[in-house]
Length: 566
Image 1: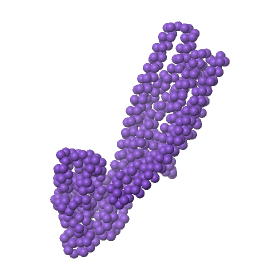
Image 2: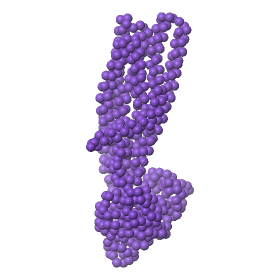
Image 3: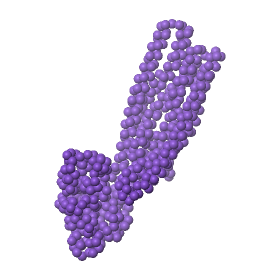
Image 4: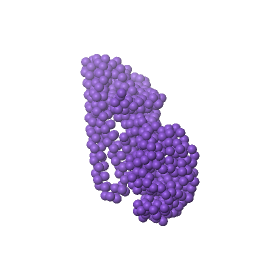
């Protein structure tokens, strides 16, 4: 059996192989063009050496003109091959990064959650920075090969002048790469840790933004900001460590390249002084010694980028290879189903049992808010069916036997803190643009005053998280979205806590009217909604303790009266 770290590494390598395999054509074209660029760059000092040699030996204007024409061809080749080579590689890089971003985002939007210990902010970092750095491998490999081509051409050209010069380049390059490959491992581990800490800091920011209003409400913002400062400081310190390691790596690479270039220059000068090579070959050797520093720099940087891409790929593997929390069924419920909760035990829930018949409007008064939240989570499939005892049935079929898509199609549980998206009122009510009964939902949720307040109407722009709406307006917008979905079974949890009593009365009446003939369960303590329901269930200490109409319960149950009257 593989350890988790080894398994993750293997999966990260698989992601890199996938990226390379599906961009093979672009990489081949880019490698050819970049190899041509490096070959032309290498040919430039070689051509200069030949020009000097022939000029001193023949002193022919014709040969000089041909040499100048050859230099023009070389310069044109350098310009065009670089331009089109980088265009091909960067297009493939950008496209591949987009594919991984979409894939990671798609994992987060799947109906069945993945068993991965990452917060939304960390997943966001993986879907952006790590996807980009993984796709960089598409540019890294062609640049690595083309740099190797330049070094080999330079070594061959110098070897033709004198074998010792060629051997010096080959041996020196091998030594440089050996040193830098060892250092690149340190960069990979440091970068992996930095990415993790930056992602944690991003997740902390996301949590703070979501909970900013409650934090201000009880004075917890200072403690929360101190917590973020601590996480951010850790990320900063790790970033400084990575920068330091990168600086040492870059400095070492530059120094070693300079030493090799100086060694080639001095050796060529000594050979020229000894008469082993001529003046043209000396000019060529000095020119190549200067030129070779650029491909060597690229060549020596590639191990670092490979390690960074591998670290990012391993982090993406955390999301892409994570197993689903549960394996859903494949069945579908019948149309117009009923909802049945049978002996469910989860958290504070203790053998909760009730049934909402098809077309019935039922309210559930939970005396403990935690029990209400846990019941809503179970019904919304946020808790896998195998994580609680008992069963929940939709149309007589257990949720564990149904596909998640089918459950979502027939059953909607509107969350207490429904998210508001940047867009318009219309796109928040009908996100998919399917032409749902938006007007009826707006009227039932009493969102009409918000629509009438702005001349744009339903096209009024809404900021991220509904920042330009009040708490009551956000809640009514979320309710309108749930009603517009027009599902067979709708579960609402505390949909009117942020509105005034008069509006609450109107919403209760409107919802009961709009949902007539549709199965509806409202988890609430609102007297208006309780009174509008066909019957009321009382959830106390994890079990259903009473069942009757709202008015009968008010008359007969003192505890109920104290719990729901305002």
